[in-house]
Amino acid sequence: MAVLILVTAVMAGFELELQRKIVGFEPHLTVASHGAFFDWREFAKKALPRKHVTGVAPYVQGPVIVEFNNLCITPNMRGMRYDSEPIFINIRKLLCKGSFDLTGDNVILGLSLADTLGIKVGDKISVCSSSNLHTAISEIDRAWDQKSHESSYSNLLERLRHAIQPEFLTVVGIFRTGHYLYDSESILVPLHIGQKLYNLGDNVHGLAVKISDPYKSREVKEDFLHAFSAATRIDTWIEKNRSLFEAIRMERSVMFFLLMFIILVAAFSVMNTLITTTVQKAREIGILKALGAQTWQVVGVFIMHGMAIGLLGTMIGLGLGMCLVHYRNEISHWIAFTLGIEIFPRDVYQLTEIPAEVITSDVCTICLSAFLICALAAVFPTWFAARLDPARALRYG
Image (cartoon, rainbow, N blue to C red; front, top):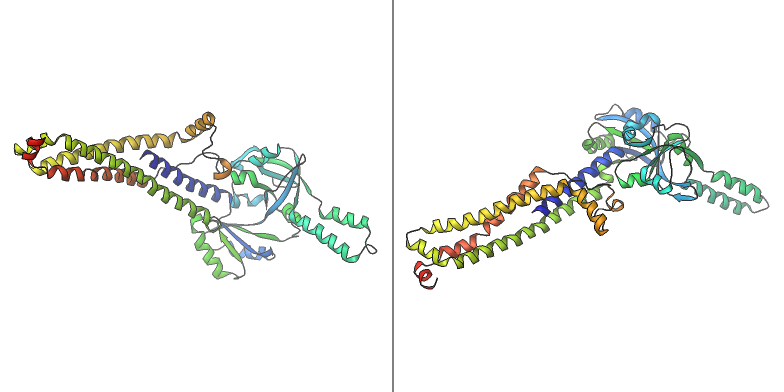
């Protein structure tokens, strides 16, 4: 039962922690068009006064190539305005080094990404986007079509240099969300840098919408779909992570039923113990019945025995389970240090520590189920004791 309490608490905590991290870093609702979002200012004016909407901000988002000290990595870039920070995330609370200053040619990185490249606050990094490479390939194709007599190699090289010219940005801050995916694959840049990297001009990729209650994002989406063009693509934070949350819930349910079989095995052990006790105490049962003990009184003894075992086991399992939940990270670190086995790898579960959320209803369900199963395990030995004939018990006992 202790293992079941631990697993249920960890799975519930894992789901809730992921929701907190996602809601704390991702927009509640994103509105985008197919390609560049041209009329985003008009859309923002119409969207802001609507019900539950507390903020709207433009963004540019996509993969980029970051180079530092001859090391390259391809994180996900988010271009945002300096004053739109509260609509996305409260990055000031997440900063562990440096300061929040998304102006000019500044950039803010995730902690794991900075550690991977050996970046510190004040370093300069080069950033270029996939659109730069696409432009370079287009220039080569155009030069090929025009043939060498119309375009010299020097002109081609000049156009290529201009096409793939990276942006040199200064690292002013490093953040830590606790979500490994965000900390290892995210950089934040000013909006104009993102627009320049993706050759968007004054356009953006989409709008981030902040909602007073993140769990009302579906309601706001329906309102937007009715109010605005059907060609607009609207996604909620729940829809973007639906497969992840459904997988966690499915795994949680499966683990609950699988571990419940462990309790059933324990119940069979209780039943076997009581059957052995019944056989060994056949003579005593016969004496009790010969002295006038009623069948229900004999049955009650075995039922109480089974309930006492179930109650004691439930209390021990509850105490041990709560201790395991409380010291889960310490136990994980000890196992990793002693046996060299990392039972909660950060790059797999995307969290730096093992989360846990003790849900009272789940714990009550587990305890009640374990107690009832142990109590029901006493039914068969009770039935055997009730059918015992006093004369045969005294003769052969």
